[in-house]
Image (cartoon, rainbow, N blue to C red; front, side, top):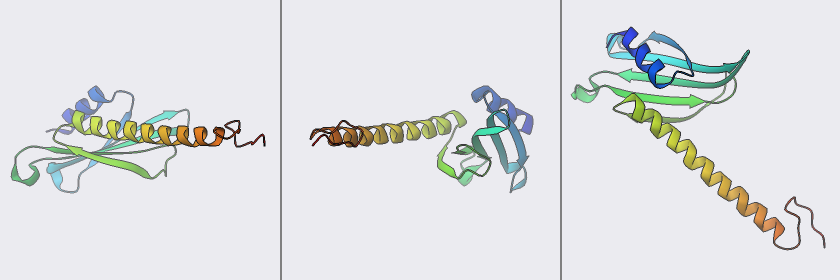
Length: 127
């Protein structure tokens, strides 16, 4: 795949990011891209995509995607890998959605637990 085709694939699937392509570690077999979403001078989200051709001699490319949150030096939050870019990105998104649901349930349990014995749900007891 040419770099221009890789850029087209990235912008087609993730048009909300501004993409920068870099040389891969292994010549033409590895392509790297970094996409950012920003608001003014604030970086809101960073997405890294690595495309490796001929993975494990299967002849298929494999995509590894990872993302970071707010700020240029934000740590990578999670990584997902799949045979297509769309599926790798979907796996990453589904992971974040699972985590959001899990944390939401825990927050709700804590709120309910505080309110159960006469508290107002804000940590203030009326005893």
